[in-house]
Length: 428
Ligand code: IMP
Image (cartoon, rainbow, N blue to C red; front, side):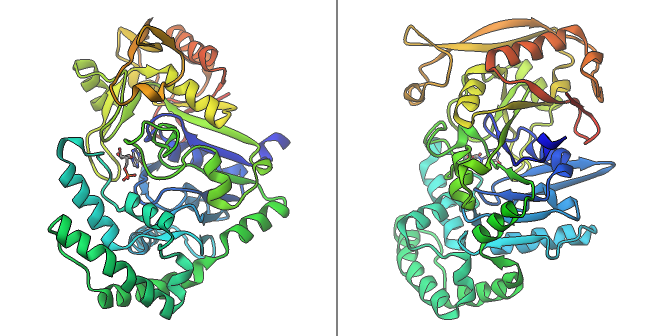
């Protein structure tokens, strides 16, 4: 089992909501530390075990295992109010959150004007809107890159905090009022509120980079928990319909201060079909009864926003792109049971882009939706596979489907999920 004691990244291979929470939770046992490296409370990880069902937005899924250290990395954007609410909710159902949750002092802070700007822009964009989660994620990352952001460490310095909030309001208020005709923010009130959050979060704030590197030096096994997914990556996704961080493997190095040599294995989590929320390219989208069936059977409604997800067939160019960008060692194929009732299942094997065949995702074709998916049809298995835990017990047609995905992506499907519960899983 020595191989298992290596650091592992778990990253979404599609457009998010692949079931990363379940996979992280499942694999957690073998790790000492679970760390997030990007994103904020736009993420929504659902973890189900026994008859309990939990939603996590900011806190890594390792929190349910008492002996795991959970770290919110510097690459994240953190809404302190949302974090405190999440901590309180989990504690109220008996989850222990003490020394096991630490926050990097270099992570950036989301303030209410970020959220207001996010919502105002989306409203102003009308049909062209990105379909963000409305949590202020994009504007917070923009402020970070502009170098006027408020970092978690600033929460602990009263003078710096006051100065930075006043400066930010002087800039954001005229934009909110003048451009978008929205309410403005009183810097004194924000200062008071954020001082209060700071007091509550202070014991958890630490140098995240030193902490994680100490853990690595001490030989602890680290799991890097991705949020959102490869096709939502700010550089490699379907820009501009993406989130504002690097969800792919490189984000781990910058978002936690961990050198590449410490990332030993990378698992990509992919649904056995495809979904996305919000606008943007989705070549295999099904706007028909099949799509509706996937949505209903797969319960494809957003964990954070409750929005109904767009659904479609499995897209191999997307998975090949994820395998290439992240150097995937294996795929965790989730929600295979959602396909149980189809008599035929289609898989997109490539795109025809202006007469040329593409086997990976063509960034240049996104703006004009200039890709025609090419499909291969598989026979469905039309029997329930819910709860199956052995690969050999799967119907032949399901095995054929999985083997095709493995051959075409070059990645073994080491984990196959046959239901939402922890125990409804095949581990090969
Ligand atoms: P933002 O991250 O709120 O700025 O949203 C940008 C895009 O990423 C939108 O299409 C969102 O629907 C999508 N997105 C953000 N977080 C998630 C997630 O956790 N799952 C799926 N889509 C997400």
